[in-house]
Image 1 (spheres, helix red, strand yellow):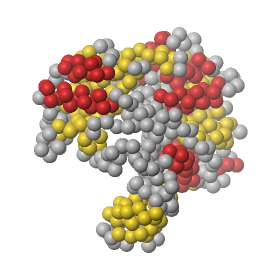
Image 2 (cartoon, rainbow, N blue to C red; image 1 turned 30 degrees about the vertical axis):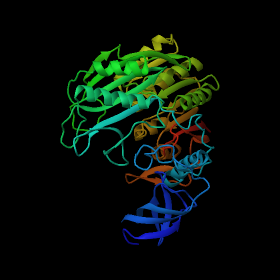
Image 3 (cartoon, rainbow, N blue to C red; image 1 turned 90 degrees about the vertical axis):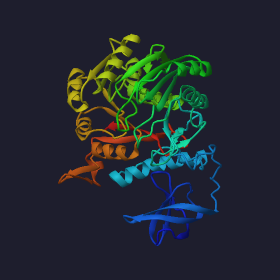
Image 4 (spheres, rainbow, N blue to C red; image 1 turned 180 degrees about the vertical axis):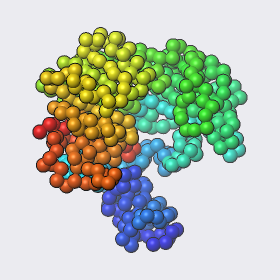
Length: 464
Protein backbone atom coordinates (compact mmCIF):
# COMPACT_ATOMS: atom_id res chain seq x y z
CA UNK A 1 0.00 0.00 0.00
CA UNK A 2 1.36 3.39 -1.00
CA UNK A 3 0.59 6.86 0.30
CA UNK A 4 -1.45 9.01 -2.15
CA UNK A 5 -2.50 5.92 -4.12
CA UNK A 6 -6.21 5.32 -4.78
CA UNK A 7 -7.75 1.91 -4.06
CA UNK A 8 -11.23 0.45 -4.44
CA UNK A 9 -12.63 -1.43 -1.47
CA UNK A 10 -15.81 -2.15 0.53
CA UNK A 11 -16.28 -0.92 4.11
CA UNK A 12 -16.74 -3.74 6.61
CA UNK A 13 -17.38 -1.82 9.84
CA UNK A 14 -16.72 1.33 11.86
CA UNK A 15 -13.91 2.76 13.95
CA UNK A 16 -14.37 4.53 17.27
CA UNK A 17 -14.42 7.95 15.60
CA UNK A 18 -17.32 6.99 13.34
CA UNK A 19 -15.08 6.35 10.33
CA UNK A 20 -15.77 3.44 8.01
CA UNK A 21 -13.14 0.69 8.04
CA UNK A 22 -11.92 -0.65 4.69
CA UNK A 23 -9.35 -3.35 4.08
CA UNK A 24 -6.56 -2.83 1.56
CA UNK A 25 -3.81 -5.45 1.26
CA UNK A 26 -4.91 -6.88 4.62
CA UNK A 27 -4.44 -3.52 6.32
CA UNK A 28 -7.37 -1.66 7.93
CA UNK A 29 -7.95 1.79 6.43
CA UNK A 30 -10.01 4.30 8.40
CA UNK A 31 -12.00 6.67 6.18
CA UNK A 32 -14.46 9.31 7.47
CA UNK A 33 -17.83 10.06 5.82
CA UNK A 34 -18.32 6.54 4.46
CA UNK A 35 -20.76 3.87 5.66
CA UNK A 36 -20.50 0.18 6.34
CA UNK A 37 -21.23 -1.82 3.18
CA UNK A 38 -20.32 1.00 0.79
CA UNK A 39 -17.90 0.38 -2.04
CA UNK A 40 -15.72 3.40 -2.66
CA UNK A 41 -12.53 4.74 -4.12
CA UNK A 42 -10.29 5.78 -1.22
CA UNK A 43 -7.04 7.73 -1.24
CA UNK A 44 -4.38 6.73 1.29
CA UNK A 45 -3.20 9.72 3.32
CA UNK A 46 -0.89 7.97 5.79
CA UNK A 47 0.24 4.51 6.87
CA UNK A 48 1.48 3.93 10.41
CA UNK A 49 1.34 1.35 13.17
CA UNK A 50 -0.27 -1.40 11.12
CA UNK A 51 -3.16 0.82 10.03
CA UNK A 52 -3.83 3.40 7.35
CA UNK A 53 -5.88 6.55 7.13
CA UNK A 54 -7.55 7.82 4.00
CA UNK A 55 -10.24 9.98 2.48
CA UNK A 56 -13.12 9.10 0.20
CA UNK A 57 -12.61 10.11 -3.42
CA UNK A 58 -15.86 8.64 -4.75
CA UNK A 59 -18.65 6.41 -3.46
CA UNK A 60 -19.29 3.76 -6.08
CA UNK A 61 -22.09 1.85 -4.33
CA UNK A 62 -23.81 3.99 -1.66
CA UNK A 63 -25.49 2.44 1.37
CA UNK A 64 -29.30 2.74 1.63
CA UNK A 65 -28.57 4.24 5.08
CA UNK A 66 -26.76 7.23 3.60
CA UNK A 67 -28.55 10.58 3.92
CA UNK A 68 -27.86 14.19 2.98
CA UNK A 69 -26.22 16.15 5.83
CA UNK A 70 -28.32 18.98 7.20
CA UNK A 71 -25.30 21.26 7.63
CA UNK A 72 -23.46 22.75 4.64
CA UNK A 73 -20.26 22.77 6.74
CA UNK A 74 -20.47 19.11 7.75
CA UNK A 75 -17.42 17.99 5.77
CA UNK A 76 -15.34 20.95 7.03
CA UNK A 77 -16.39 21.40 10.67
CA UNK A 78 -15.18 18.95 13.30
CA UNK A 79 -18.25 19.08 15.53
CA UNK A 80 -20.28 16.27 13.91
CA UNK A 81 -19.19 12.96 12.41
CA UNK A 82 -22.46 11.19 11.53
CA UNK A 83 -24.78 13.56 9.67
CA UNK A 84 -24.36 11.42 6.53
CA UNK A 85 -25.85 8.44 8.41
CA UNK A 86 -29.59 7.87 8.91
CA UNK A 87 -30.57 8.20 12.56
CA UNK A 88 -31.52 4.55 13.01
CA UNK A 89 -28.02 3.60 11.86
CA UNK A 90 -26.48 6.13 14.28
CA UNK A 91 -28.22 4.39 17.17
CA UNK A 92 -26.98 1.00 15.99
CA UNK A 93 -23.45 2.39 15.63
CA UNK A 94 -23.46 3.67 19.21
CA UNK A 95 -24.68 0.39 20.66
CA UNK A 96 -21.94 -1.34 18.69
CA UNK A 97 -19.38 1.19 19.90
CA UNK A 98 -20.11 0.30 23.52
CA UNK A 99 -20.27 -3.45 22.83
CA UNK A 100 -16.93 -3.44 20.98
CA UNK A 101 -15.18 -1.32 23.63
CA UNK A 102 -16.23 -3.74 26.38
CA UNK A 103 -15.04 -6.74 24.38
CA UNK A 104 -11.74 -5.32 23.09
CA UNK A 105 -10.61 -3.44 26.20
CA UNK A 106 -11.95 -5.60 29.03
CA UNK A 107 -12.84 -8.92 27.43
CA UNK A 108 -16.45 -8.47 28.54
CA UNK A 109 -18.97 -10.13 26.23
CA UNK A 110 -22.27 -8.49 27.15
CA UNK A 111 -25.59 -7.75 25.56
CA UNK A 112 -26.08 -4.03 24.94
CA UNK A 113 -29.67 -2.83 24.69
CA UNK A 114 -30.68 -0.66 21.72
CA UNK A 115 -29.63 2.94 22.20
CA UNK A 116 -32.23 5.23 23.74
CA UNK A 117 -33.11 7.74 21.03
CA UNK A 118 -33.17 11.51 21.40
CA UNK A 119 -36.55 13.09 20.67
CA UNK A 120 -34.64 15.87 18.88
CA UNK A 121 -32.09 14.78 16.33
CA UNK A 122 -31.18 18.41 15.58
CA UNK A 123 -31.46 21.68 17.55
CA UNK A 124 -31.00 19.80 20.83
CA UNK A 125 -28.00 21.55 22.42
CA UNK A 126 -28.68 24.00 25.23
CA UNK A 127 -25.03 25.11 25.38
CA UNK A 128 -22.90 26.88 22.78
CA UNK A 129 -19.15 27.62 22.90
CA UNK A 130 -17.90 29.63 19.92
CA UNK A 131 -14.21 30.24 19.30
CA UNK A 132 -13.40 33.70 17.96
CA UNK A 133 -10.14 34.13 16.06
CA UNK A 134 -8.40 35.72 13.13
CA UNK A 135 -7.61 34.42 9.64
CA UNK A 136 -4.29 34.88 7.83
CA UNK A 137 -5.28 38.37 6.78
CA UNK A 138 -6.11 39.35 10.34
CA UNK A 139 -9.85 39.37 9.69
CA UNK A 140 -12.07 38.24 12.57
CA UNK A 141 -13.50 34.72 12.24
CA UNK A 142 -16.38 33.29 14.30
CA UNK A 143 -17.34 29.63 13.94
CA UNK A 144 -16.32 26.14 14.99
CA UNK A 145 -13.02 24.24 15.00
CA UNK A 146 -12.16 21.93 12.13
CA UNK A 147 -11.46 18.32 13.12
CA UNK A 148 -8.25 17.83 15.13
CA UNK A 149 -7.19 21.45 14.82
CA UNK A 150 -7.71 24.97 16.13
CA UNK A 151 -8.46 26.28 12.67
CA UNK A 152 -11.83 28.02 12.86
CA UNK A 153 -14.40 27.22 10.17
CA UNK A 154 -16.55 30.37 9.73
CA UNK A 155 -20.22 29.71 10.47
CA UNK A 156 -23.48 31.62 10.64
CA UNK A 157 -25.44 28.83 12.33
CA UNK A 158 -25.21 25.22 13.53
CA UNK A 159 -28.13 22.78 13.14
CA UNK A 160 -27.37 20.76 16.31
CA UNK A 161 -27.41 23.95 18.39
CA UNK A 162 -30.65 25.56 19.49
CA UNK A 163 -32.44 27.99 17.19
CA UNK A 164 -30.84 30.97 18.93
CA UNK A 165 -27.34 30.03 17.69
CA UNK A 166 -27.52 32.21 14.57
CA UNK A 167 -28.70 35.18 16.63
CA UNK A 168 -25.70 34.82 18.95
CA UNK A 169 -23.21 34.63 16.07
CA UNK A 170 -24.81 37.66 14.43
CA UNK A 171 -24.68 39.60 17.72
CA UNK A 172 -20.99 38.82 18.29
CA UNK A 173 -20.06 39.92 14.78
CA UNK A 174 -22.05 43.14 15.08
CA UNK A 175 -20.59 43.95 18.50
CA UNK A 176 -17.00 43.40 17.41
CA UNK A 177 -17.45 45.38 14.20
CA UNK A 178 -19.09 48.36 15.90
CA UNK A 179 -16.56 48.42 18.76
CA UNK A 180 -13.48 47.86 16.59
CA UNK A 181 -12.49 44.62 18.35
CA UNK A 182 -10.40 41.85 16.80
CA UNK A 183 -10.53 38.09 17.10
CA UNK A 184 -7.70 36.51 19.10
CA UNK A 185 -4.75 35.08 17.15
CA UNK A 186 -3.48 32.11 19.18
CA UNK A 187 -0.14 31.89 17.39
CA UNK A 188 0.70 35.60 17.46
CA UNK A 189 -0.98 35.97 20.88
CA UNK A 190 -2.70 39.18 20.00
CA UNK A 191 -6.28 40.30 19.60
CA UNK A 192 -9.22 41.01 21.86
CA UNK A 193 -11.98 38.36 21.90
CA UNK A 194 -11.21 34.65 22.35
CA UNK A 195 -14.64 33.02 22.52
CA UNK A 196 -18.22 33.34 23.66
CA UNK A 197 -20.16 30.76 25.67
CA UNK A 198 -23.95 30.68 26.02
CA UNK A 199 -26.19 28.47 28.16
CA UNK A 200 -29.98 28.52 27.85
CA UNK A 201 -31.82 27.95 31.12
CA UNK A 202 -35.60 28.02 30.98
CA UNK A 203 -35.74 30.42 28.03
CA UNK A 204 -33.14 32.78 29.54
CA UNK A 205 -29.49 33.07 28.57
CA UNK A 206 -26.28 33.01 30.58
CA UNK A 207 -23.58 34.50 28.33
CA UNK A 208 -19.84 34.61 28.99
CA UNK A 209 -17.62 36.74 26.77
CA UNK A 210 -13.99 35.60 27.02
CA UNK A 211 -11.50 38.34 26.22
CA UNK A 212 -7.71 38.57 26.31
CA UNK A 213 -8.00 41.91 28.10
CA UNK A 214 -10.63 44.14 29.69
CA UNK A 215 -13.14 45.38 27.11
CA UNK A 216 -16.44 47.25 27.24
CA UNK A 217 -19.01 44.45 26.89
CA UNK A 218 -22.11 46.56 27.60
CA UNK A 219 -22.90 47.04 23.88
CA UNK A 220 -22.94 43.24 23.45
CA UNK A 221 -25.42 42.93 26.32
CA UNK A 222 -27.69 45.45 24.59
CA UNK A 223 -27.56 43.58 21.27
CA UNK A 224 -28.16 40.19 22.92
CA UNK A 225 -31.13 41.46 24.90
CA UNK A 226 -32.65 42.82 21.71
CA UNK A 227 -32.09 39.52 19.84
CA UNK A 228 -32.73 36.96 22.60
CA UNK A 229 -34.65 38.49 25.50
CA UNK A 230 -33.58 38.05 29.13
CA UNK A 231 -29.78 37.82 29.32
CA UNK A 232 -27.13 37.92 32.02
CA UNK A 233 -23.65 38.69 30.67
CA UNK A 234 -20.30 38.00 32.28
CA UNK A 235 -16.86 39.08 31.10
CA UNK A 236 -14.03 36.59 31.62
CA UNK A 237 -10.49 37.93 31.25
CA UNK A 238 -8.33 35.04 30.02
CA UNK A 239 -4.70 35.96 29.38
CA UNK A 240 -3.41 32.39 29.50
CA UNK A 241 -1.56 30.75 26.63
CA UNK A 242 -3.26 27.38 27.09
CA UNK A 243 -6.59 25.98 25.88
CA UNK A 244 -8.60 26.56 29.06
CA UNK A 245 -12.00 28.02 28.14
CA UNK A 246 -12.17 30.30 31.19
CA UNK A 247 -9.81 31.89 33.70
CA UNK A 248 -10.68 32.75 37.30
CA UNK A 249 -11.11 36.46 36.49
CA UNK A 250 -14.89 37.03 36.23
CA UNK A 251 -16.77 40.33 36.00
CA UNK A 252 -20.54 40.78 35.80
CA UNK A 253 -21.63 43.09 32.98
CA UNK A 254 -25.42 42.66 33.00
CA UNK A 255 -27.76 40.93 35.45
CA UNK A 256 -26.72 38.80 38.41
CA UNK A 257 -24.45 36.40 36.54
CA UNK A 258 -26.80 33.47 37.15
CA UNK A 259 -30.43 32.42 36.86
CA UNK A 260 -32.56 30.35 39.18
CA UNK A 261 -34.54 27.65 37.43
CA UNK A 262 -36.21 24.29 37.95
CA UNK A 263 -35.73 20.94 36.23
CA UNK A 264 -37.49 17.65 37.03
CA UNK A 265 -38.95 19.35 40.10
CA UNK A 266 -35.55 20.41 41.48
CA UNK A 267 -34.79 24.11 41.91
CA UNK A 268 -31.23 25.13 41.07
CA UNK A 269 -29.03 28.11 40.33
CA UNK A 270 -27.08 28.06 37.05
CA UNK A 271 -24.07 30.17 36.13
CA UNK A 272 -21.50 30.17 33.34
CA UNK A 273 -19.55 27.27 34.89
CA UNK A 274 -22.51 25.14 36.01
CA UNK A 275 -22.44 21.64 34.52
CA UNK A 276 -25.69 20.52 32.90
CA UNK A 277 -26.09 17.86 30.23
CA UNK A 278 -26.43 19.54 26.82
CA UNK A 279 -29.56 17.61 25.79
CA UNK A 280 -32.46 18.43 28.14
CA UNK A 281 -34.77 15.65 26.94
CA UNK A 282 -32.26 12.81 27.09
CA UNK A 283 -30.91 14.07 30.41
CA UNK A 284 -34.41 13.81 31.90
CA UNK A 285 -34.86 10.30 30.50
CA UNK A 286 -31.46 9.16 31.80
CA UNK A 287 -31.85 10.68 35.26
CA UNK A 288 -35.36 9.24 35.59
CA UNK A 289 -34.01 5.76 34.88
CA UNK A 290 -31.13 6.19 37.35
CA UNK A 291 -33.53 7.33 40.07
CA UNK A 292 -35.90 4.43 39.34
CA UNK A 293 -33.07 1.93 39.68
CA UNK A 294 -31.60 3.57 42.80
CA UNK A 295 -34.90 3.89 44.65
CA UNK A 296 -35.71 0.20 44.20
CA UNK A 297 -36.06 -1.46 47.60
CA UNK A 298 -35.95 1.67 49.76
CA UNK A 299 -32.23 2.22 49.44
CA UNK A 300 -29.77 4.89 50.50
CA UNK A 301 -28.10 6.36 47.40
CA UNK A 302 -24.43 7.32 47.31
CA UNK A 303 -23.73 9.65 44.38
CA UNK A 304 -20.03 9.71 43.50
CA UNK A 305 -18.61 12.58 41.40
CA UNK A 306 -21.80 14.41 42.31
CA UNK A 307 -20.87 17.85 40.92
CA UNK A 308 -23.40 20.56 41.67
CA UNK A 309 -25.86 18.11 43.24
CA UNK A 310 -28.72 17.92 40.71
CA UNK A 311 -28.73 14.11 40.54
CA UNK A 312 -28.05 13.83 44.29
CA UNK A 313 -31.15 15.93 44.95
CA UNK A 314 -33.27 13.76 42.66
CA UNK A 315 -31.97 10.67 44.48
CA UNK A 316 -32.62 12.24 47.88
CA UNK A 317 -36.21 12.94 46.93
CA UNK A 318 -36.83 9.33 45.83
CA UNK A 319 -34.65 7.34 48.25
CA UNK A 320 -34.38 7.13 52.04
CA UNK A 321 -31.42 9.51 51.80
CA UNK A 322 -28.67 10.48 49.36
CA UNK A 323 -24.99 11.25 49.91
CA UNK A 324 -23.09 13.23 47.28
CA UNK A 325 -19.28 13.01 47.15
CA UNK A 326 -17.46 15.64 45.07
CA UNK A 327 -13.82 16.76 45.23
CA UNK A 328 -14.30 20.21 43.63
CA UNK A 329 -15.03 22.60 46.49
CA UNK A 330 -16.96 25.10 44.36
CA UNK A 331 -19.26 22.37 43.01
CA UNK A 332 -19.83 20.93 46.47
CA UNK A 333 -20.77 24.41 47.74
CA UNK A 334 -23.31 24.67 44.91
CA UNK A 335 -24.76 21.33 45.98
CA UNK A 336 -25.16 22.68 49.52
CA UNK A 337 -27.04 25.67 48.14
CA UNK A 338 -29.24 23.42 46.03
CA UNK A 339 -30.03 21.28 49.07
CA UNK A 340 -31.28 24.31 50.98
CA UNK A 341 -33.28 25.63 48.02
CA UNK A 342 -35.18 22.34 47.81
CA UNK A 343 -35.72 21.71 51.52
CA UNK A 344 -33.69 18.50 51.48
CA UNK A 345 -31.54 19.11 54.55
CA UNK A 346 -32.90 15.99 56.29
CA UNK A 347 -32.34 13.69 53.27
CA UNK A 348 -29.29 15.00 51.37
CA UNK A 349 -25.69 15.07 52.61
CA UNK A 350 -22.89 16.66 50.56
CA UNK A 351 -19.29 15.66 51.22
CA UNK A 352 -16.31 17.46 49.69
CA UNK A 353 -13.46 14.99 49.28
CA UNK A 354 -11.97 12.14 47.26
CA UNK A 355 -14.31 9.28 46.42
CA UNK A 356 -11.87 6.59 47.55
CA UNK A 357 -11.30 8.33 50.89
CA UNK A 358 -14.93 9.14 51.72
CA UNK A 359 -16.78 6.03 50.57
CA UNK A 360 -15.93 3.87 53.58
CA UNK A 361 -17.06 6.55 56.05
CA UNK A 362 -20.40 6.91 54.22
CA UNK A 363 -20.88 3.14 54.43
CA UNK A 364 -20.10 3.24 58.15
CA UNK A 365 -22.79 5.90 58.61
CA UNK A 366 -25.37 3.85 56.69
CA UNK A 367 -24.68 0.40 58.12
CA UNK A 368 -27.69 -1.88 57.93
CA UNK A 369 -29.27 -0.03 55.00
CA UNK A 370 -29.64 -1.21 51.43
CA UNK A 371 -27.06 0.91 49.57
CA UNK A 372 -26.87 1.85 45.92
CA UNK A 373 -23.79 3.55 44.45
CA UNK A 374 -24.19 5.88 41.48
CA UNK A 375 -21.00 6.85 39.61
CA UNK A 376 -20.98 9.54 36.92
CA UNK A 377 -17.29 10.47 36.56
CA UNK A 378 -15.74 12.89 34.05
CA UNK A 379 -14.69 11.70 30.59
CA UNK A 380 -11.32 10.39 31.83
CA UNK A 381 -13.19 7.89 34.01
CA UNK A 382 -12.62 6.90 37.63
CA UNK A 383 -9.31 6.79 39.46
CA UNK A 384 -8.11 3.21 39.94
CA UNK A 385 -8.35 3.56 43.71
CA UNK A 386 -11.95 4.80 43.38
CA UNK A 387 -12.98 1.82 41.22
CA UNK A 388 -11.40 -0.55 43.73
CA UNK A 389 -13.20 1.20 46.59
CA UNK A 390 -16.54 0.72 44.82
CA UNK A 391 -15.69 -2.90 43.99
CA UNK A 392 -14.86 -3.70 47.61
CA UNK A 393 -17.67 -1.65 49.17
CA UNK A 394 -20.30 -4.37 49.29
CA UNK A 395 -22.95 -2.10 47.75
CA UNK A 396 -26.18 -3.88 46.84
CA UNK A 397 -26.29 -2.20 43.43
CA UNK A 398 -23.86 -0.12 41.37
CA UNK A 399 -25.04 2.24 38.63
CA UNK A 400 -22.39 3.53 36.24
CA UNK A 401 -22.84 6.45 33.83
CA UNK A 402 -20.15 7.29 31.29
CA UNK A 403 -19.67 9.50 28.24
CA UNK A 404 -16.58 7.54 27.13
CA UNK A 405 -16.96 3.86 26.14
CA UNK A 406 -13.21 3.27 26.46
CA UNK A 407 -12.86 4.44 30.05
CA UNK A 408 -16.19 2.79 30.90
CA UNK A 409 -14.81 -0.54 29.66
CA UNK A 410 -11.64 -0.11 31.72
CA UNK A 411 -13.49 0.84 34.92
CA UNK A 412 -16.16 -1.84 34.50
CA UNK A 413 -13.43 -4.40 33.79
CA UNK A 414 -11.66 -3.60 37.06
CA UNK A 415 -14.92 -3.54 39.01
CA UNK A 416 -16.01 -6.96 37.73
CA UNK A 417 -12.53 -8.47 37.85
CA UNK A 418 -12.41 -8.86 34.06
CA UNK A 419 -9.19 -6.80 34.21
CA UNK A 420 -6.51 -7.63 36.76
CA UNK A 421 -3.16 -5.98 37.32
CA UNK A 422 -0.07 -8.07 36.66
CA UNK A 423 3.37 -6.47 36.90
CA UNK A 424 1.80 -3.04 36.76
CA UNK A 425 -0.26 -3.82 33.63
CA UNK A 426 -4.00 -4.50 33.38
CA UNK A 427 -4.60 -7.87 31.73
CA UNK A 428 -7.80 -9.64 30.77
CA UNK A 429 -9.13 -12.30 33.11
CA UNK A 430 -11.45 -14.59 31.11
CA UNK A 431 -12.65 -16.41 34.26
CA UNK A 432 -13.90 -13.28 35.99
CA UNK A 433 -17.60 -14.21 35.93
CA UNK A 434 -17.20 -17.02 38.46
CA UNK A 435 -15.47 -14.82 41.04
CA UNK A 436 -17.01 -11.38 40.49
CA UNK A 437 -19.22 -10.01 43.27
CA UNK A 438 -21.48 -8.35 40.69
CA UNK A 439 -23.38 -9.31 37.56
CA UNK A 440 -24.50 -7.02 34.77
CA UNK A 441 -28.23 -6.32 34.92
CA UNK A 442 -28.26 -4.31 31.69
CA UNK A 443 -26.31 -1.85 29.57
CA UNK A 444 -27.98 0.86 27.51
CA UNK A 445 -26.49 3.75 25.51
CA UNK A 446 -28.37 7.06 25.69
CA UNK A 447 -28.02 9.26 22.62
CA UNK A 448 -27.20 12.52 24.35
CA UNK A 449 -25.30 13.73 21.25
CA UNK A 450 -27.10 12.97 17.94
CA UNK A 451 -25.11 13.45 14.72
CA UNK A 452 -21.82 12.94 16.61
CA UNK A 453 -19.78 9.86 17.51
CA UNK A 454 -20.31 10.46 21.23
CA UNK A 455 -22.72 8.58 23.47
CA UNK A 456 -23.71 8.38 27.12
CA UNK A 457 -23.98 4.88 28.58
CA UNK A 458 -25.86 3.51 31.58
CA UNK A 459 -24.72 0.27 33.23
CA UNK A 460 -26.60 -1.35 36.13
CA UNK A 461 -24.84 -3.97 38.26
CA UNK A 462 -26.53 -6.19 40.86
CA UNK A 463 -24.66 -7.79 43.72
CA UNK A 464 -24.76 -11.59 43.41
